[in-house]
Amino acid sequence: MRDGPGAALPRRSGDDGARAPRPPARAGRAVRRRDGGGVVPEVGYRRALRRTATSVERAVPGGPVTVHTDDGAQVDADELLLGTGRRPAIDDLGLETIGLQTHDPIEVDSSMRATAMPDGWLYAVGDVNGRNLLTHVGKYQARICGDVIAARAQGLPDDTPGLRDTADDRGAPQIVFTEPQVCMVGKTESQARADGYPVRTVEYDIGAVAGAEVRGVGYTGRAKLVVDEDRRVLLDASFVAPDIDDLLHSATVAVNAEVPLDQLWHAVPPFPTVTEIWLRLLEQYGP
Image (cartoon, rainbow, N blue to C red; front, side):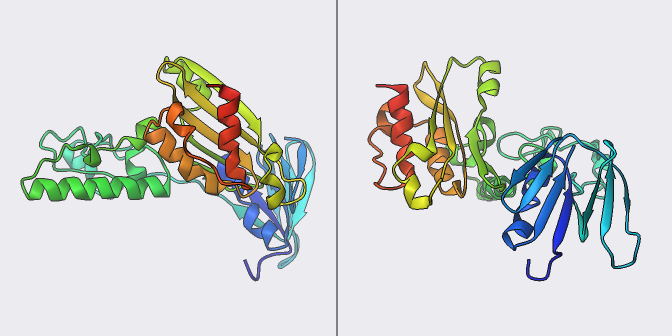
């Protein structure tokens, strides 16, 4: 953002609203966020949670925007940023002519074939199938879909492990680009327990790792693992810290490949980096 407003007011709930202040804040703009309570100070902006906007006005053309909230307060900013959300863009595809609903995701199997089509000729990838509304997951699904179609066209087996989507079921990686970042892959603890897994969790302060000092004075954060106790594999890994996204792919490999904890001990993290958080978490879990 090179020529943005001096002060911006994002209006959106959920992770879209959480990450909306980051670009203008990093560009040196003052940002306030209202997403439905209390005002929480953050780097470059502040957040108001559990508040609802009741009206918006710009009294003078080119002047500041004023947002009135349900608690009687008002917030002034140079501009108002709106996160409008998203929905599958399938209204005009003619899906109703083949018996599919246009207001629901297209249900697919792990090869991306629409389950409602008995001949298996229709495929759906990305947001339209409702599995995981993430750009990188859409790319992952598209690769599988393309490989399945190519295999079928050549008369080759189309049911090999590489031609099936398993990441969606185990839990795709995702990042909320706030300050600090929130990164996770897999099933949350509550999801894992609801699914009947025998769960044990371990947590550790990322700021207590020696490599945290390399990241900066006062660097801190939190890491958590969710472990399937019977199989001794990871069901989830979560990290909350500034610029911690570089840890997420190693966690994704561990979760999706179901690497046993006994083997993870031999993936030696380099010193001095925050990747030593893996060692500390394993120490917390024990042999």
